[in-house]
Length: 382
Image 1 (cartoon, rainbow, N blue to C red):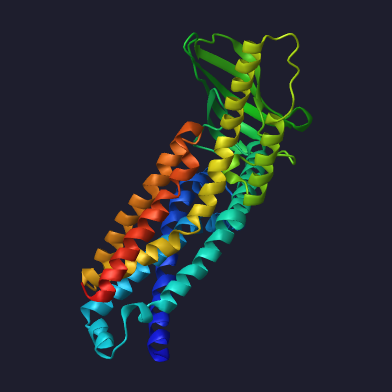
Image 2: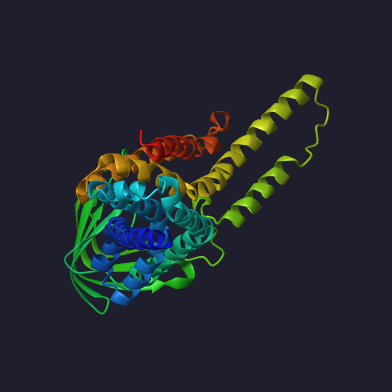
């Protein structure tokens, strides 16, 4: 039995490392293409800074990669063992399926603990650190770099195209002022320009010499365009969905304390007092609903590995296939079903009457219940 357990554990761990690595790369690539690559291309960042940003994104994608990797690993390994008749040989030796998979279940519990650490502490902190790094990059590079030959869309209301940039001395500068509903846009062209920063006032000043206007601006001569710099505040507070579990608990207690603060009722009538209390109760539920949802989401996510394992083992046995693409395809379908509940809960997080914090627990209950039934049937050979 010990030999079988060691063999199965090695197989699962090897497959788990590969699948988690693959899903991490895929999810990381999506985030890099969306957020990091534009900074690298448009702002000429060093690869060291990009590597730091990617490193901070890894724990964030592990929130999803760990459960997906565990599900895929169980589907692949037990599908191969079923196809190779290894499970029949194990049964013939008098060993039940439940006895065989005990180390896999223990491994899934250990991954739940790791997922809880990532979901509730490491992931949110790394996400906040990444956002801080991104804000710092925006601050440092937006006031010193206007890249040549590219459309620059970083400043609301303006679109820039710079011909040459030589130590903040610009040539062939085109400025497109984007129009709104009530005013038309226009184009300004200048052969020369200069870029300066006004850090105390958080401004970047773009000097245009011999500027000529087209469209809605008919002026000519020298022109100064002030642009707002992005700020990097040291007292910046993370968003609710980027808070750690402890920060969320503190935020929830703060909201509850504020909702319990007595409010002077003055000379209100009895009916007005009742209406005021109902209004305050509704405001309190609205304030705490999103925080409560994030708390439950972090905890519920932590149990995904166990539910996926319970479902993955019997499904892998029933597949009776060793092809990797089939296992990955089934895993992706199950993951989509699981996280669809989370998406529904997220869309209702501002509606406390729908109990969104309980919706995030439904996939755990469904997967664990279905997995337990399928596992019981597989153990009986049904």
